[in-house]
Amino acid sequence: MSVEASPEALQEAADLWNTLSGVEFIRAMRDKRLPEISDISDYIGQVVTAADPGRVEISWTPGEKLCNPGGIVHGGYIAMILDNAVCLAASSTCDRFLPMLTLNLNIDYLRGVRSGESYTVTGTCVHPGSARMVANAVIDDARGRPLAQASASVLPNKAFTR
View 1 (cartoon, rainbow, N blue to C red):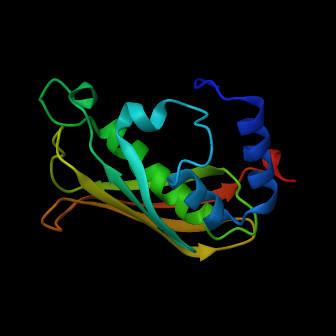
View 2 (cartoon, rainbow, N blue to C red; view 1 turned 90 degrees about the vertical axis):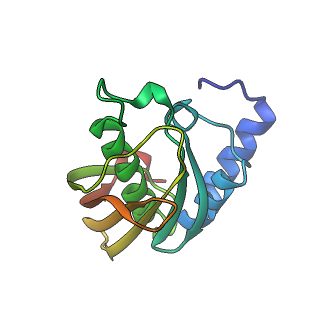
View 3 (cartoon, rainbow, N blue to C red; view 1 turned 180 degrees about the horizontal axis):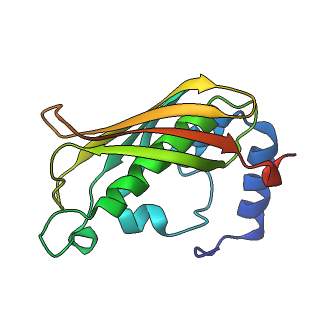
């Protein structure tokens, strides 16, 4: 873990892992009831703001460190946030939270993404299958214009099955 957590906090996280549904676990992440296991959310500027079964919403404020030499956010980071959204949307449909493995991620880059601005990234699971799942995600700017969209096939990472 990159963030120090007390033994009690780790035990509470394990208890939540074993009892909460996928959407409840994502809400616990949103509410900071779980210790961070990685600095990635802070690094890329993502915060989960809403979760319902089959749908998640992320607030994304990419920093300048994510920009390419042309001064706009690098497409790889755009792909990363879209991948996070589709995976969380799929996980939100599970009886217990499971991380997802991405089989494919198809992205349409529609407009440039600028650092320092806040965006809404919405992930929607359109096929919550028992093996292969399909989800979509879109990044919208403050005016509601889509900047990029993705469709993906994901599957539950069985290494985490309990």
